[in-house]
Image (cartoon, rainbow, N blue to C red; front, side):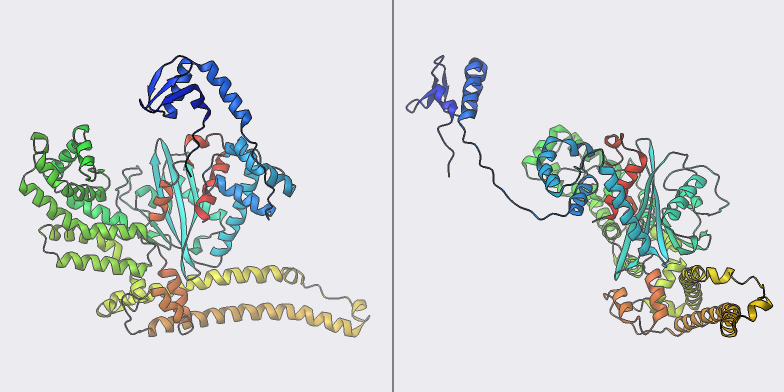
Length: 606
């Protein structure tokens, strides 16, 4: 259906078809065509008063839009939940709740439900209520479980942010929850970071015994914050590329190096062989020339992608720069001049270097985008090393050497060795290394004791609370003679209860100790006797353990902990990149606690 042609603007003009022109009826000005925009522009410029009168008359003559009565089924909780989502996951500014459009949309809903309208003045009450609900759910989900932590610090715009996430097994999958993203108002020392981390863990009811591992980038202040003592520390806070000695002990907690960070450092070691005055430097200068106004339009006109400049702190961007540059080879040759001078040998070397970096780039992308089980991480790492060994590329040897210097501290970790032990797809790797086989068994035994200890601690707490009155009742005061003579049956019953309170308590201690020894010995037997047949390399490892959980109940509990150890701290980094709005000056009028609750809900609700 076409547009109506009797728009009121045309009443001011006479359209002459022969000349294809519109003549103003007021000033006889002639304009080509009959375009509404041109007609309006002329009236506003030359006859504004007449135009304003005509607009008002036209508005009055418009037919009144009919209102329609509709009905919806809403619960008060649904409306509150929707408003909370708008300011958390929806990132809507809180002041928007006071805007006229929002009031127009919601006023009748609030009135119909007989609820107090939600505005910027009371929305945080509902946010706080939702915060407590989600927090309680997370606390309950981590109860009686060993969990792994991810720690990272981000700095920018003069602000430091500490991120703490927990990872564990739930509903047959890896579960990642953000425990805290807080702004650091103190110096980034090991002591201050440790205090902040401890406060977060205590808030969620996590004890040190429940922390199985900590994954970080091994910056010295992050490591010091969780209890590492290393003679190489001088107390200063250096770059994010700081490194530590291979094996670090965080109390009794396993420390895991971030695989993505380790891989990045290895490639950066390799790329240092290419000085700014050689290949990468020449490629970077060429890209900068292509990104100038002189060439950007020409590149777009030819339907080619724009060149990318790399970031010195991200080697992946160097690979992307080289790959994009190769796509512009013909363009550079067709527009050759002193700015775009690049020899054929240079183009060949760029292609060879990009091919050498490609398998590492793809592996890094997988680490960045997927939550891998620890066994799957090792499988990916092993596949990467084999792929590079098979490559016939002049740079492959140097790359393998750079990665080899870094991987020992990553793959020799007890958690990784134990994951291989519990992975029938790759367990054969340990068959020729009796030392690692023994280390894996010892570590798994230690972890099971920790799992059993966490579970029994809660059970003991419940039992202590339920028998608290019985524990304090007996004070060894014997009944008097007059009391014994009043009712023999009642007295015997009381005496039996009095004596049984001691017998039961003693029996519980012995039975608890016997039960603990039995459970641990059962686990040791399962660990030592476990000798599975190899399975398909592509099978989901936790699907395998779900099938075996009744055959190997103790190993199943261990697999849920070991295989869910995070190989990277990527989810924390992704959290930082998603907080640009939440931590911006747009939130400056909110309290620190309000911002904390908004961030928490946005990161922990789907």
